[in-house]
Image (cartoon, one colour):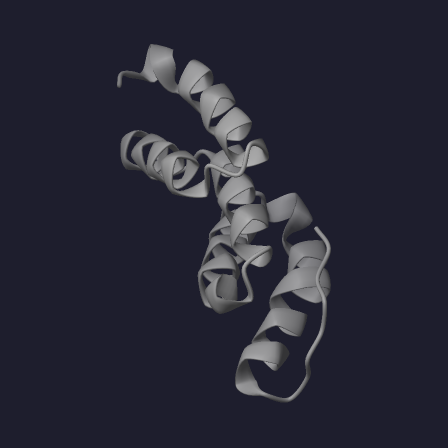
Length: 100
């Protein structure tokens, strides 16, 4: 995959995720991030997918952290609305339901 194909692969990954083909979508998203680690939309897409699976909330948290670094103007909102509640949940201090 070259940079010209990132958008089409991103769109295909989104379709796969919507169809419930999460393993295939995740592979495409990860491949995009190998080529362009700063692709914020891909981090967000992975985060949303991981939030749907409680066992993967730690991975969602990591992508939220990356997203906050990539989009500094939204970093405070991401920190307060998503990162802090996820950290509390993962530490056992709170059980919450996050909706991106």
